[in-house]
Image (cartoon, rainbow, N blue to C red):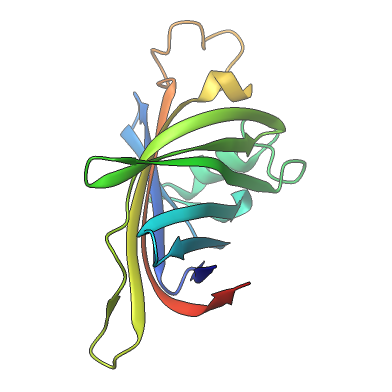
Length: 178
């Protein structure tokens, strides 16, 4: 049995960045996503992590650049609407966890592993159980066939290859899993 903690924009921030020579770094946030973290209070272990991000909700301080990122040139968010992660193995590592699973992005599925911090859930000021968690992904965009420019994208000079995505969850208990 486990406790379900729902990931949603009201209690989560998903943000990221990639090196971009014109702007220094292209920093972005996603506006719509959903998911769930299942925590087993008996073992004090995270049992699963699932997150679905609506790719078209990417937003930065550069609206024109956002349009390019959403276009068929890069993410092609009309064709590849979601970025989905589903864990398949979670191991205790130090004070946190190592989460392994499949990340599906831009029509490509690949296994990733990332550090995940999720201290034992605690009660908030109103007595509701809250799970505070955070994860950090670093993915090589070319592994997911995300190419900025076919002619200029060989050395990663204009746009870096590594995308970082950080997410911080502050989620209330939503119910029990059977």
